Picture 1 (tube, one colour):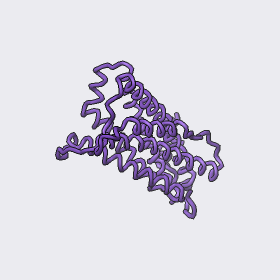
Picture 2 (cartoon, helix red, strand yellow):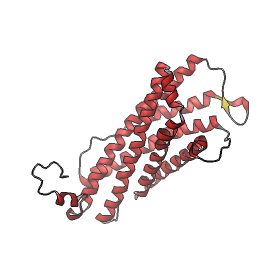
Picture 3 (cartoon, helix red, strand yellow):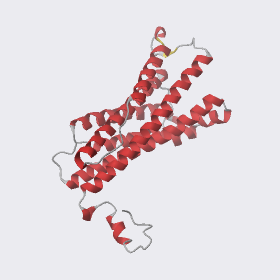
Picture 4 (cartoon, one colour):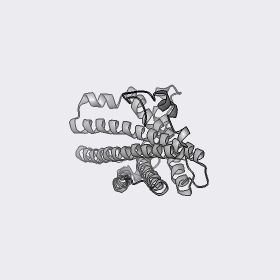
Length: 264
């Protein structure tokens, strides 16, 4: 993954990867919170929860950070690339997150102070966004897999981090089926949602989609946080002992008798 590079350059690349996994994991942590609240509303129909979900404050303070943190994380991962496979997957992830940035701005432009104007194709944007979410999940898992293999191969370190693709593939297939089945193809352009679903069918589909998103985002958040920790570990190995991360902090508190502040 980091062929033909010296230790210092490897450490820099691993630092970007650490930050990239961490930023992406924080974005998905917020997605877990959002999906949990949405699931709570589906199960309870509490008006207080709906009021939170549809409020502009929630869209800006939670929806915005989800979009921008995952974009920043994908950019940092892309910056740490060296191998061909890492380049391919991280570039695709960055492009998809860039599309999400554009969609989010189109949906919330007036709330962030941009001139108010109408953007058509809301239904189409929503379905594309859902499918991109699942494809991004798959790409994150693939990057975690590549990085884990690198740790095992280069540093002879055993790792129990073996990401699984199954749930994300199920979610992607479900999102494609929902988008195809719920689009009124006879209505012409722009595409709109069908009108024949009864409330119970809509509730079941919303429950299925939200549960899949909640479980998958939680699973991948754990993968990303563990990968950030692995990347940080590799960075400390790549650097010479005198240039280890936070070395100044260790020297400053070297005489701490309780060893409460020292980083090992």
